[in-house]
Image (cartoon, rainbow, N blue to C red; front, top):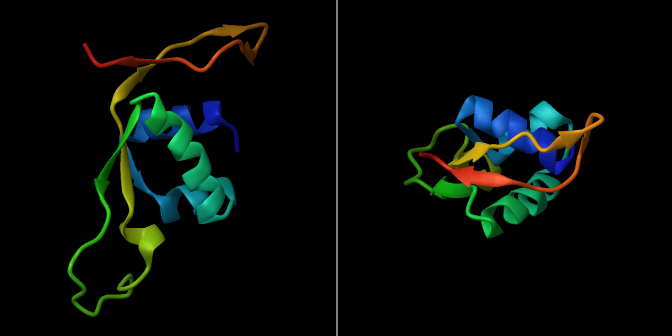
Length: 93
């Protein structure tokens, strides 16, 4: 999983939990969080929900399932010859 792949996935989907992204990319929640943090530092992703009151459901106590992020920037294509030249995020108009 690369920053660009995460950007494409989350900007197309809108929102996803860390657990959903980890499954999608076949990665660990910690790796997903590391890349999410890079986009968060550019104000492209925001934390929508970090926890909820436990009602005894299957996800109770599963931080990765309740940690939901939303893409708040507009993905900008900065590719040259199929490769990213820089990490870009533009706010929604």
